[in-house]
Image (cartoon, rainbow, N blue to C red; front, side, top):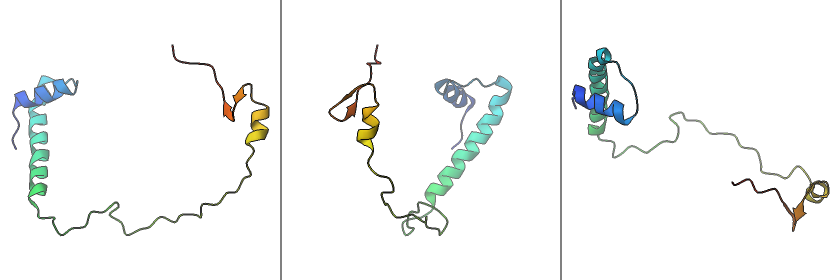
Length: 95
């Protein structure tokens, strides 16, 4: 796909980017090359390829999900300025 200079100006306007007039031709060339590469990649038959979350054959080591601390909610709520039915009450912050 080949872009025109007006296409690049329109893209820059929509993205709220300032591009110098002297640089527009280089952007036309670069963006057209990128779009050609994307078009070429879309033509590749990938119907038998399994999607990957990660290109590396690695797994993340996870620790067991175990409780390591005791429930201290009552202790902390005793020193809180304002508590109601087990919840901390805070002043309204919406204006």
